[in-house]
Amino acid sequence: MSQHALSSLREQTRALRAGAINVPQLLESALKRINAIEPAINSFITLVAADSLREEASALQRELDAGRSRGPLHGMPIGIKDIIQTRGLRTTGGSAALDDWVPDEDATAVAKLRKAGALILGKHNTHEFAIGVTTNNERFGACLNPWHQGHIPGGSSGGSGAAVGAGLCVGALGTDTGSSIRRPAAFCGAVGLKPRYGRVSRHGVMLVSWSMDHVGPLAASVFDAVAMLDAIAGFDAKDPATRNEPWEAALPTLSAPHGLRRAGVPRRWIETTCSPGVGARFNEACKVAERAGLQLVDIEPPDAIDLLNALRLISLVETHVAHEERFAKVGERYSDELKALVRLGGYIPAPHYVKAQQLRAKTRAWLADQFKDIDLILSPTMPIVAPRVAGRNFEKTPPSVVADSSGVFCSFGALGGLESISVPMGLSDGLPCGLLLTGPGRVERALLRLAAAIEMQLPPLPELPI
Image 1: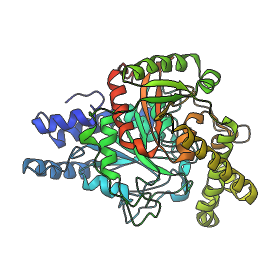
Image 2: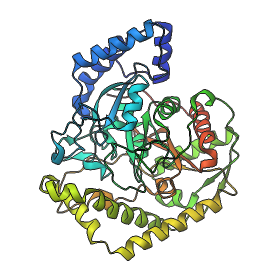
Image 3: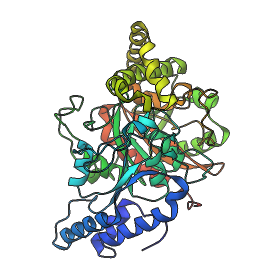
Image 4: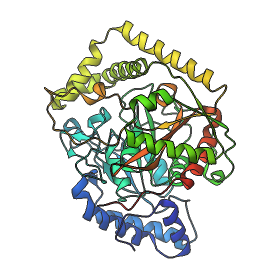
C-alpha cells in the first residue's frame, strides 16, 4: 500500500474487487496517512480508536471473502462532520458547549453510510456549530489547508474538505447552508456536492437554517461523491423536509450522455469579483465545458447584495431559533463570536425576515425564468482561493458568517434549494479553485453526468505538497 494520499473510492473499490488489497490494509494506509499528516492540518476533532476500527475492517473483509459486497462504499474510510450525530462517538458541534456529548443514535445519513459498508474514521473539525466560513475553531483549534498550512480550508465543513483534500479518507460527510460544502471543496481541491433540498435527511444533524440546510458528500472525484449520495439519499419520515419520492441510484448511469445544451454564465459577477488567477482558470474550464457539448450564454443575475443579505438574514434568524433552547442552558460556553450571532438573530425584526424571504422568492422566480432557456448555471465556486489564516480577535474582526461575501456564486443553490456541485479546476497561486455547476430539479441526474464529463477533461491537480 502507498504511504501517500489515499486513492479515490473508485480506485480502491476496484483494487478490493481484484484482490490487490483488502479492507484492513486500506484502513492501515489511512491510519498511517492520518498519523503523518493530521498534526499539520487538524482536520479531526475525534478519531475512532484504532483497535475498534481494525475489528470493524476485519468484519467487513470477511463479508467480502464470503462474496457479500454492500456496494462501492464497502470498507471505504469515511469521515463525518462533527455536527452530525454518531452513535457511541463524541459529537461536539465544534463547541465547548457539547464537549463530552456522546449520542445514542446515528444521524440518518450516518446510519445509511454504515449500512452501505462505510468505515467511519471519526469526526471532522468544523466552524462552531457550522456557523462560519473559516473553521478557525476556538475550542478545538484552527483547521488548516492541506495545500498550504498558512491558509484556511474554508468552512464550515473545513475539516471534511481538508481531510479529503489531504487524502486522509476517501470521502467525508458535510453540511451546506450557504456554501459550507462547496467552499471547502474548492479551497482544498475536492469535489463537493450539495444535493437538492430535501434529497438527504437532516435527522440527527445540528441545524443552522431549517429552510436552507443540506447534507452532502465531499470526495476525491465526482464518481465518489455520487456513490456517497446514492447511499444517503432518500425519504426519511424523521425529517419532514425530505422529498417523499424514491431515489434511484445515479452511479450506474454516470457515464451516459448528459444531454444538457445551454449553460448560463454570470459574466459581470465573474469580471468584477474574481481574482485574476481564478478568472483565468474559469476561462480554461469554459473551453472544457464547450468541448463537453455546452453552449455558454451570458446571464444577468439579480443584485448580489440582495442575494447575500437575504441569505444572511434568513440564516441568522433561523440560527437564533435553532439555538434558543440550548443557548438558554449552556450559552456561556459558546464562543464570543457565536454568542453575538445567536443574539443578533433574535434582534432582527420580523418585517426584515419577511423581506428577506420576499427577496428569496424573487430570486427563485428569476431562476425559474432563466431555466426556461438554460439548463444550468456555470461559474467559479469561489471568486478567490483560500485566504490566509487570521488571528481570532473578535473585537476587531466581524463574525465571518456576516462579513463574508465570497459565497455569492453559491447563493443560487442555497436560496433556490438547487443541486450544486464543485469540481476542482486547477491551481491559482499554488492553491486550488473550483468550478461550480448548479441546476434545477429537472436536470438533477444529468448535472452529475455533466460534472463527471467535465472532470474527465479538466487537468488533474498536481501532487499535494504535504
